[in-house]
Image (spheres, rainbow, N blue to C red):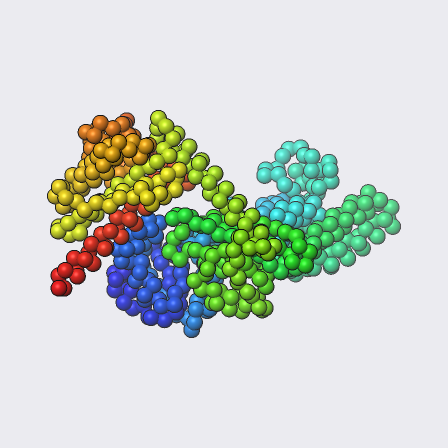
Amino acid sequence: MQITSRIKQFPQSPGVYLMKDKTGRVIYIGKAKNLRKRISSYFVEKNEIYWKTSKLVSKVEDLEFIVTDNETEAFLLESNLIKKYRPLFNIELKDQQRYAYLKITNEKFPRLLVARRNRNGEFYGSGGEIYGPLVQGGSKFLSVGLLRKLFKVRVCNTMPKSPCLEFFIKNCDAPCINNISQNEYGNKIQSLRNILSGKEGIEEFVSEMKSQMVVASRQEQYEKAKEIRDTLLKLDSLKVKQKVESLQYTNLEEEIIGYRSDLRNGVAHVIMFRRSRGVISDRKTFEFELIGDNKLDSFLFQYYSTAKTVPTYIYVNEKLDSKSILELTLEKASGHTVNVIKISPHSNSIQGQLMDLIIKNINLRMQNKSDLAISDLKTALNLPSYPRIIDCFDVSNFGTSYAVGACSRLVNGKPFKAGYRKFRIKLAVAQNDFAMIHEIVTRRYSSIIDKDNHEQIPDLIVIDGGKGQLHSGANAIDQLGLEIPCISIAKAEEIIFSYENDREIRLPKSSLALRVIQLARDEVHRFGLAYNVKLRKIEKSIHRH
């Protein structure tokens, strides 16, 4: 079914929408107050402003929706569905891994491993029994280590021919040299299974081990009794560690969350603050791409939907679009009042001072990332100097009647709006992209040359298009007598063409250099399209009158 036909079936009610690709996989999940209005907004031209959202839309082959009674239910349902499907384009918080899953392998002498998921929610590695989620935080590694020692589970990937260090420090019974039978080893693994699955409590296990220790002592098997005693001490250590962590987390009263974004990514920094003791107990930083509805509101709900508890007070530095709905949803999930409060980083309160510290850290993080990206771009393109100033050109047609061009400018990897320029094509024939690129590049730098304003000459020019557009722009530069490195970027496969050495460059998707180029292109799309839409409105107004 065509997307446009599918959209007409969407109701004007609150609910959740699911976007699917050609394989039927869910790639994005969002919520809306008005489903038809929200989903329609994705499939109109203005959404080309955001390149990543356009990329999402280009992959959508089918749509589904689920109606809810209100926005609160939509929030909750969206969160549950994101956890279930783990869509590629939704926010995925790295700290969702803090709840550990453990796996007992299905080998002859099984091992105990930390189980990890991929983006599809599937567990890595060969088959085995999965248990969890279990322990919170970084202690999951401590837990799996202690459990291995408690039950003397082997840690080697393949069975060696001679015992390793684990045997000599009494952490393993060395099944590799038949020091323990498969049946005896299996009994220990079964006890471990019982505890992990909840069939047997830790207390029952402790009681049984204490009985074995007493029996061993009476039979004068002092070495065995000592080993059991050491195991019990380790177990007590584990229980105390978990109890302390639980107390630290459940006693949280406030969290301060600073947020900043550019045109591609959002960065959120969370500080957990105990008002009663005036101390910071933890901090976390998250970064996510701004696609669809991915913004601070969505981040907050995704973050707290995976948290063990929700604090009474949540301080943020930006106004939220759905503050009341978010509070109501979190209250329903947590069972207590939740207050989301906007606070200035310049206020004199302790929360304001912490917010100021958070924003400074985020700014430093983004600045360092920007500097690194510029350096990576110089290396990737083999440029003669650092591309501190980058201009990007694009053209768009309005039918056959007229066309417009645009130029965006990045300075030190960030948009510099004062350097943006828009052009209504004068000389080139509409639909001739090559001629139009030549025209707008010529006009852009002719004015700079005429004003003898050479400090405004960029270090790099990016043309949106393929080799044809690149050669047109580069020819214009040559005719003006300028020496500026020129590249182009093709939309479909993100291939970069270099004019200087006539080669194709394919950068990894994670490359910071590629992100700078994409940002320049996103900006010229947004700016040029806004100008095109404005001219269309003027044209329609003229026709009406």
